[in-house]
Length: 386
Image (cartoon, rainbow, N blue to C red):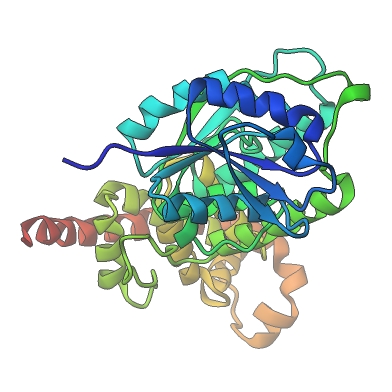
């Protein structure tokens, strides 16, 4: 039998001496193993923790919340803990909610578990409500997974997973990056409802820097979204040879995708959708549309993006223009040249739009049907392989 999880409560602290002792005392009341990571505080953290049976790790200078959590993961591994549960030092979280995490940790030890804050409470900042919706949306786009509170700091992490992920962010943007990359690595994202306490604005202590931290989060989402658009899978923790999904290697690509529990029907529909969008007159937007759509549906973005490559100019676009010309004039364009299909592209826009309304659905059906018929025997052979 696998060993029972050993859990360490982690409280990253930066200049929270006024609330830290109370938070630690309440944490100790529900769990005996508590670590405080002093992230370069300039107030008297030692005095706040005097006489309390807690471990302390310290950064000589402030390095950011993300760096503090990674330090905690290293400490946890050193002392034999399998998981860390982080909560904020400002008193926003109720340590009594810690018990809600334990059952899920035992049920799914590889999951990252997020505490979804109940915002039906007084004094919730408008910026927190907006930031929550904003981050939730982009996580869904980037991973296809739904989490109700991406910005919550009350979380459970497998320590080994944290130390294995290629994480770059060290400040508040860390909490977005770690969820996306954990999902890409194959970890499930789970949630538990938690309470939250916001003091009145005059008594609130926050080190979130509205301009610089929002810029970091914006740049991070740009990088993560760009990576999510690329038509090959992110590296799974247990799959080192996943490989790229390429339209030029259809059988190998189908094997990779079917091995990830996709079905021939899903892959056929996804490939059809990718080619449908690629045939539409949406230059520069097709990949973004596929990415957004796949984040909110069961469409496999890798299959859709790969089939979208079939529509790289000029062949499909030329067929659309010729079809649209026929619909407008009752006969086909008599001259097929760079001049008529290239330099006169602006004059052919209406014909491209009309033609795409016919070509796009026909191409989608054809591509989807071929992918489905090819995937069926490939999937069967994978099941028969010992």
